[in-house]
Length: 254
Ligand SMILES: [Mg+2]
Image 1 (cartoon, rainbow, N blue to C red):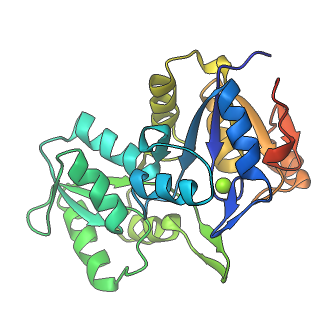
Image 2: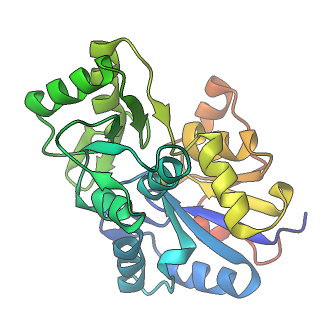
């Protein structure tokens, strides 16, 4: 197979929180000489510029234009479909920064769209407000459905937990823009300007990275440094094209 571009998941594939996976920097800098690299994360708490800085601090060269976050995908989706809407945001500053950069109006009053991402300051009061906007007909969008996050201080609830709470309350399902949605895979294909089968998606999570790649017609590589383990492949019946122990094992000619 001849690939033109690699899409690289971040957490669990390149680093674990604040710790770089050993020699991932060298591997990515070598791969970047051969392929177009696009970094991908469902984490909406930071903007693309902040993730680019984080990677630079690890010695991985990358600009914000080589990054897609679920927050950026949500901003693109809203700009495409609800550009004139007033958005009620449950989410952190990184998500708000992406919306502002897309000239999208964030508001607390008279909102006709609710966007939910990971928010460590999530409260019952904000949930109530979101619920009432949705019951009055506001569009309900979620950055992603990840149930939990693995951090250096243990497991924490992910954006999906907050989304589920609101879904339960309002009886409606959110439109999801992050992995494994086809919206984000279409965004990737548009950004890379290559055919889907010329893209290799590399990630540690079968249910997000690998599933998104398969649904989008791309090829996929599971790395065993994060969320999914070998036995999950049979259990979930999600089959990657390649399996590597770590991102450092990806050959330069793949
Ligand atoms: Mg990951």
